[in-house]
Each structure stands twice: as structure tokens, then as C-alpha cells.
Amino acid sequence: MKHPAVFLLLALILLASMALALLTGGTSLTSAHIFEALIRPEPGDLTATLVWELRLPRIATACIVGAALAQCGVVFQAILRNPLAEPYTLGVSAGGALGATLAIILGLAGLPMVVMCFAGSMISVSVVLGIASLRQFSSTTLILSGVILSFLLSSLVMFIFSVASSRDVHSSIMWIMGDLSSPGPGAMRIMIFTVFPLMAVTLCAGRDLNMLSLGDEKTYHLGGNARVMKGILLVATSLITGGCVAISGIIGFVGLLVPHLMRKITGADHRLLIPSSMLAGSSFLLLCDTFSQLVLRPIELPVGVITGMLGGLFFLVYIALVNPSEVI
Image (cartoon, rainbow, N blue to C red; front, top):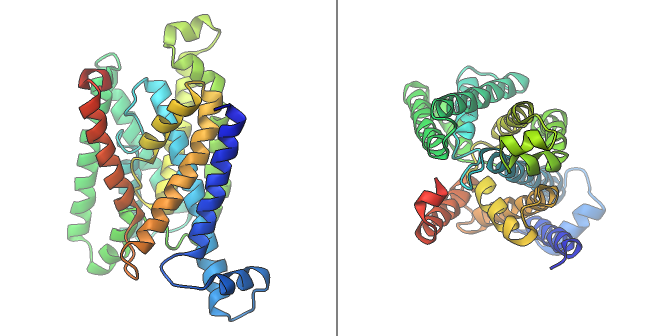
């Protein structure tokens, strides 16, 4: 399939996913009422409130977070040259979640919470890279240290929950599991002023990632500074992950599943892989979120549960079909 056709197909899938999310959801609404609310919203109308204040912001959040996490997965896999590298497996998401949990318990919100998420993500990736540097950035060390750090940070989050008040635990436990139900205006500001600019940086880094995926020595001979390029991209993707955690909690495996699928379709050229993964990531997370609302309606599952199940199944199949020594 030619690349323009791939992007057109991905755009159509995204539009279809958005339409499905708008027409379905945790509350049953007729299509006629939804279209009426879109065209002629009336103040005080319940359907208009659900559509404009809940469903549309939720759809926008799912699209942006899905695109951001898929983009981060592509960047991590290229820089570290490991097919299992992504924010969740490297412990970056868990670091952001620990920062957000501390912010919730301390009663912080808005910008202070975002700062805490950013700090947690940066500390996590610094620890993983620091440990890996002791072993010449071995892929095995990178993945294992990331997974172990995720367990450690998740245990710290559980410890905080165990000593916190029941009110704080109740308000944060669903969010920690991945929640897109109530993004709010603060989340939109986070996306506009922090996540969007950083995503623009990594979106323009396709050529640099092509060089980095060849190795540091070849990057140097091609005129690039591998250390500076890696530093900028790792900081950008870690901050993007922190922003996503502040918005929606921990949503794992989007950055693992989507880049693998798109790499099979578009090839390894990151100038094509990044935008195609962003489109596919938006559709994937939006469909997962829609399914989480429908599967046990009126009970709503955290979207992180759905992506976690799919990611776990992917891991099992991938390791069963691929020689583990080639994976890590």
C-alpha cells in the first residue's frame, strides 16, 4: 500500500472512531438527539451538556493522549534500539504517576500537579539510563531496570494509598488506572501549553531518529551529535509522558503496540512512522476508551485496564513467536 493511501486510511479510521465514540458511551442517547445537540445546542439541555461538556472533551483527550504515547514509543524504540521500549516498560509512566499521587495527597492541582508529574517522569528515566550506563546501555539492562523500577514506584504508590485517607484514595485510584472520563479545562491547558509544543519537537525529529537508529558511530559520520540528539528527545518524550499522566493517569502499552503495527505497514523511516503512529495511536486509544464504556455499561472500566490486557497479550504472543534474546 502506498504511503498516501496509508495516511488516508488512518485518517478515515480516526474519523470513524470519533463518530463511534460520539454516538455511544456510558449514557445511551439517540443519534437524532446527538445531532440536534451538535447543530443547535440549547442551554440547560441534558443531551447538549453530555455532548459538549463530556463526550467531545473526552474524545479530544483520548486522541491527543493516544497520539502522544504512540509518538513517545516510536522515539524510545529508535533511541534505545529496542522493540520493547516505551514509557510504560521503562518506568517513565510510573514515575509520573508517583508524582501525581503525591500531588493528589498534598491537595495540589493544576500546574503544581503537572510539575510533579514532570519531575517524576524525569527522575525515572534518569534512574533507568543511569543504571543502564553502568552496563554500556545494554538493552537487557534498560528493559529490566525499567520494569523493576515500575514495580518499585507502583509499590510506593500503593504504600501512599495505604496510609492516606479513604477520600484521597477513592478520588485517585480510578485515575491511576487510566481515566479519560473528566479531562476538564485544566487538562486542555496542559495539552495546549506543554504537550503540544513537545510533540511538535519530536514530530520534526524523523531524520534524526533515522540516524540514531543506526547507532552512535554512524550518526557521528552522518553529521549528527548523538549525545545531544538523544538528550533532547529523551527529555521531550519524558515530559510528554508526564503531561499525559497528569491528564489521564497511567495508560500502558499504547507506545508498544501501535509503533510495532505501523512499522510493519509504513517501514522503518521515522519521517513516516511518527505521524502514522500518532494517527493510529489516537484511533487505538479512542476505541479502547469506547469499549471500556460499553462492555459493562452502565459500569465504566478504566481505559488503562483495556490497554493493559491487550498489551499483556501482545507481550505473550511476541515473546512466544520471537527469540527472547532478540527482544532483550
